[in-house]
Length: 93
Image (cartoon, rainbow, N blue to C red):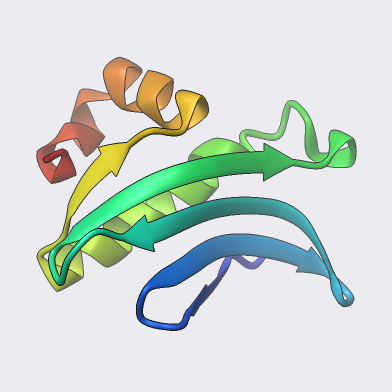
């Protein structure tokens, strides 16, 4: 499964596509040059139970670590996952 990243500089997402259709997506908006707000995560039923949401979050965390960006997880899924996983919490604002 390939996780892709798309961004226009202000808004973006980490996603998994099947053909032209996105079947999993974590959407964010930049709240400044070094601050990212995770707004929403959605995973298609066909991927349920495969930890795709966590994989999207891990890809996002890898990206923000490299870029020196801090994260505000407004998305309930991302927020709950950050609370469970101390290994990801270094990127929190």
